[in-house]
Image 1 (cartoon, rainbow, N blue to C red):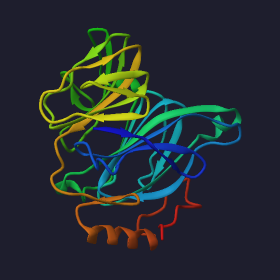
Image 2: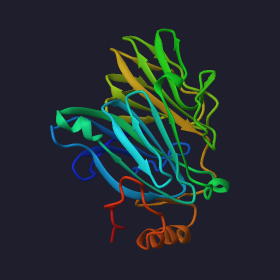
Image 3: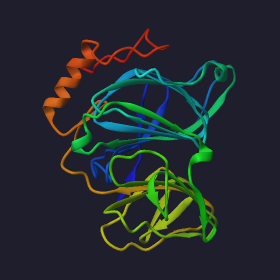
Image 4: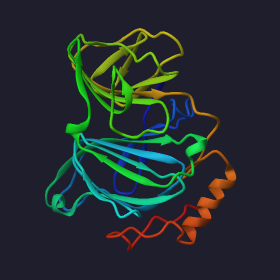
Length: 284
């Protein structure tokens, strides 16, 4: 299955949304996949994702270029730079914001990255919210037949990332040289490849930048690069039941979504220290 990214305006900048799509709602526990950029933000501008809530998921942010300041209702305040991972577990409820740091707004700045959501297993949907930041140097890197690999979350290719994932999954960045070949992790039921730069061949299909190829079940031929290419591989165990997505909420029941809507309207998620003057209202 080949999925094309669809442009979505997030208020001042555009992302390419891959998941969910009409063709595919999730790959393993990954229920949301946005590619940010690549673009150049003008001097004086920046990314301003105002405070907004989440339940029932983990947000996973990874940048290739640029920087973002994450703040949340736990009091976290963390700048993420290229190569780092921000992993926020929403659980029973958290609000956060993501903005371009003030010192970086003085000049034009390129921004390019990914934000994914991982649906929590039903037994962990109501866990206490938490936030983890893992600098680039702490993420395991290896090389296999000329392919540079970095494991961003979960476990693959014999190594594990430091992120505390609550379900079996993998999320890997791979840089392939011209003619490079990369086998798929075999221990997961659902797998996909998203091309960041260049192009690769997956199962006989040519996949270019901005496209995601979802692997069929069972054995799959290794992916191959014609020229140099950068991709991410992701997937994991199948979800333990259907998930309902509404705005920024993920839940296994419609009743839980309704509760989250009411909580946000009444201010039940709390305030974000340092960013408490505005917020995104509940959509009508």
